[in-house]
Image (cartoon, rainbow, N blue to C red; front, side, top):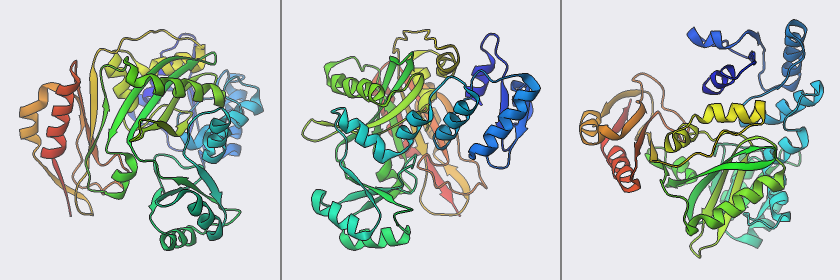
Length: 389
């Protein structure tokens, strides 16, 4: 809704909604009209709904959405109505992680070695080339969902069998990248990157996914202007150019390996999740949702934006299963570092434990000094405990 509200703030724009569930409360007023559909990820449903809105309000000027699993279908709807924006071929190369890596490698960019697997024999051959561990994921995955670290040939066979891997249902295998994991966000207009931001994960999302009790941190350090980030800037800008994005946000994961080399994990044609969009705005004192809207609707950029703060998000999770029953350590944490908290969503008692790496709640911290933010984040993840039953 933050993105939808930003669209409604643009001049001479009327926002029409296509969705499975209507928004509640004041959010309903954001939309001049709404068409509800059975399947919000089905191209046919989107086109039929847009056609109904066309008959009511005239031809659409833009067809937009932020979810990664929706980008190809949105592009197909744009093509159907002749609407400007990312075309199906570009959306598909971002969405298909195997094709994406092929395109990045063809552009001379460092990416994890990978292979599309249709059988256990394919997996064994790839493992023979790159060794274990491997990372196994769907070719069109997102947010580390259904992503596994595979440590042996036996584990690989079990995983491929359990995932019912075939030529019609292939899995993507990648070499396991070791090192510090970061993200690189860009905002593009007119095919040119106009803004970028960098974050670091403590620890990486795959390790967090493998340890569902682990509380973790995403940090946006205040200063990213130094030469230690020159390589990340170079590959980040080059990746956007190689894949042909015209406007909007991208979110790229990259690794700084132990030998000092860099490697791209993958890049998505969408704003970042896990509160990173919100954190980016807090670090630079601007509205990233409005900046996205200006890019994808007006093809305009209102920056530059100065990075004034360090920001961290602490993701709250805990040991055990079931439903959240209580939290501990909140009052003491608030007393110690409350001055740095700018936003928090604490886990709600009674809700089932989330299976997402984002956990059951979060705390966002901000200060001009990176070391102050990191110290406060350490206090949060060491002091607050989520209890389940």
